[in-house]
Structures are given as structure tokens and as C-alpha cells.
Image (cartoon, rainbow, N blue to C red):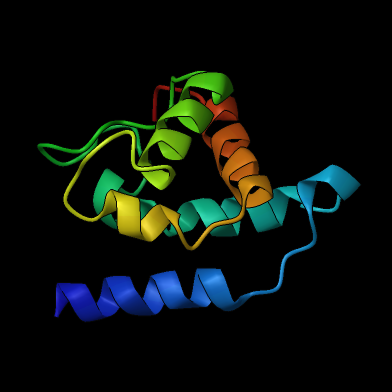
Amino acid sequence: MRNRFFVSLLTCAITLGHPTWAQQSIQPNTARGLALSCTACHGVAATHAPTGFASLTGQSKENLIKQMQDFKQGRRGGTVMQQIIKGYRDEEIEAIAGYFAAQPTSH
């Protein structure tokens, strides 16, 4: 059941045709929507992640981009993250990282 929910959420995020970050068209609400897909594993507020998953808020945008790109490029292993992140364009990864980096760490 959890897998179906996650796949549905991921599919929704991937199938939305988002404009590119380079054009400065990824709006804050769109970045928030993309980041929402991360909360299935990393927690609702992404500050207190379930055991075994990294907390996303409180990290720098650069670090988050590096970690996601490492998964995407196969430089970092994991259970499902390297498959999930392949569905995101670089511009979307930047938007997600920017969203989490901008969130306060205390919720």
C-alpha cells in the first residue's frame, strides 16, 4: 500500500511539465510541490525524518544538490533514491534543494 502511494505521488510529480529553472520559471509553489514528493520518506516537515532517512531541512542548497546528483549519477548507492531521482531534471533538483534549504529547521 505504501509503495502504491509513493509511486502515485512520484508519478504526479514527474508528469507535471515544469518550466526550467534556467528561465527562472520554477515558482516557489511549484518547488514546494516537487519537494512534497520527498516527504513520503523524509517526513512531513522533513525536519524529523523517519529512522534511516536524512533530514532535509537545515542543509545547504549546494549539499542537497550534490547528494541528489550523486544518487542520480550512480556515485551514491541506496535502496530506491537513485531510481526516484532519475525522474527529476537538474532544474527540478535545484528547485527542491532550494526549497528545503530555505525552510526553518525548527517546526
